[in-house]
Length: 219
Image (tube, rainbow, N blue to C red; front, side, top):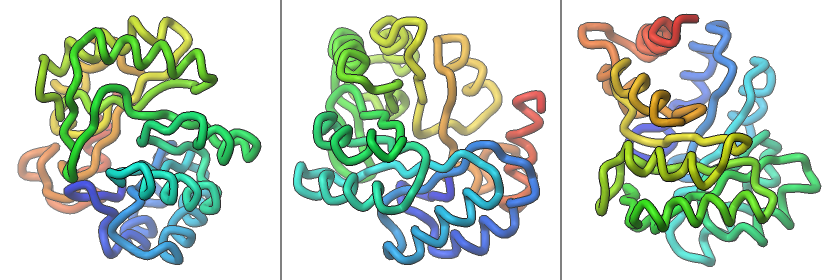
């Protein structure tokens, strides 16, 4: 994710140009931090690189979430993450071939914290699948009521074997990647740890940090 502290980084276009030849297969950004025109350019640059493109909605009110989802539909990304208005999202995104992955639980504030028990997460994931979502975007390490990995396991139960589980936020080490994978995650997002040189200690720069993540994945 071309984001730091839950916002798209101001120099996102330059960063995308710097990493475009790394062969990253998934690249995304948030709906805040830069203007819509820049986000459109960024989405186009991601598509040109051959990567699957994502935008994560971090707006916090029903009205702003709907605006963000509608704007995301115009960006032409492949997948939209976040928010919880599944009916509205599907009506705007599905016909365009855009996959929608809502937040389970009770996301609040910005940077976002996640309320909700294991049962809440499991039930929300089941409902998302029943309403035609391909999966969910779980803010596991922003949890305020339970252990993050317990919530990952609960989400996997709710999604069943077919649902796609993305763990978003606070992935900052190879050990944490392994932990979420072992608990049932299919994918994760990483942003701040890259931009703050936090994933690979002693390694400087976004490109080198991205290379360290790819290496940790065994690619």
